[in-house]
Image 1 (spheres, rainbow, N blue to C red):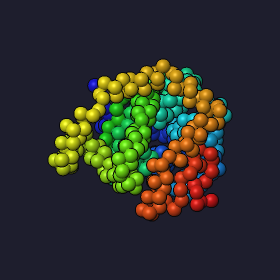
Image 2: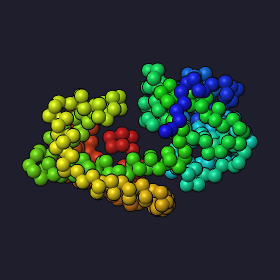
Image 3: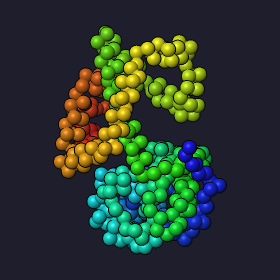
Length: 345
């Protein structure tokens, strides 16, 4: 059973006098910076001169070019997207590192796959929130925190664990519980959850329902667009996967537990999931994704554009306009092509 750490296991005194540089002021960076500051920790921000840097200034932080922020700090929160971090590390972070510093990663990917190899004289830890950036801030403000996976990859100072737990307390995750893990485990479960076909299943449901004569708008509304599904998963989060059934009618409970089970190929599904984790553990996925990045994400852009032309997407565009959620159609993967969102400059 995993080991858990709570507020009583951590002491902010273990990072007393240290300055934390938040490298990357995106969704996670902003939330964690605000939480740390509210916990009484000295925080600065390292960022290019962009909109995120402007927001950090508006939030009252001292903002510096990344290399300068690294030189001014003893603890670095590396919160730049995984695919961009190795290049930034090589140019602006690695050359500035000094003995006794601490590198904190939010995801194990770059360390596990050795895209980044820190020098032996620094502590290397991971505090990986199991929460989106907005939730990291909101749950902190509400006082109950959020769960994280924590791990130590390298303990150069002999104080890596104490510093890690102090930082975890500073961002608010020990309020709910920080769970001891490893860079490998965190990487594998994160990739596994992303590759388990959960966005393809609703499309299959849409195709079957529309083949059976159901109106496309009605099908999308029922499958995901109403928001009911997110409420049910919130129930699973708060009550437990099976206990959330008390929120359903008896008809729903019967359908989910008895009728629905008749049609699922359990062994086939388990074998599919075994292939997913095997593909990750073999290193094949990492090699494929690295090659894709080098090629400018051509395949990703092409398949995303293709998916956005599917009949379900066309129906979704119409439905979301009617519901007032979007005033434009998603016709291509603009977010992958470095373009602004349609309708915005």
